Image (cartoon, rainbow, N blue to C red; front, side):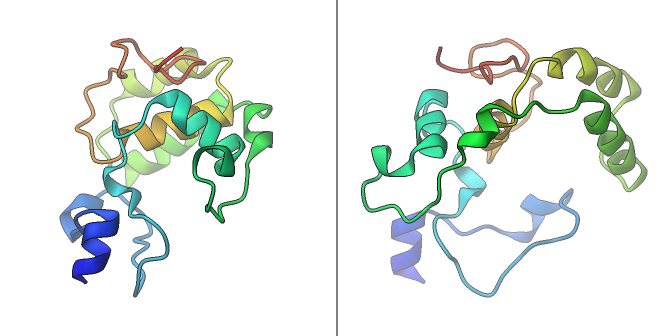
Length: 142
């Protein structure tokens, strides 16, 4: 798989997915391995790429996701998901779950997806690249 490693980066290993449920390993790669995409591109790059992929990568066959910029995340639903994940072993504290509500008010699904992508392959410290907690700008370039 040398050609894939050169094109997409180092392959993922099982230990990186200890908190993923269900495990979503496939038999071959389709597109880049996003496991280490965090910090590789700016938040603005991700925003444009998700809204209009071919504006950033002309040969891209990825679809656009413009509706994510209009749909808001549900802080209540996120808290429920965090509690469910804690029951199966994810290390969320009650303080983190309670704080999530305030942090997610006014955040779009696009902002949340960008924050998720920026965290891929990064050790989570509770801070975004700008040093603040996630905001409606997904904590990045403004």
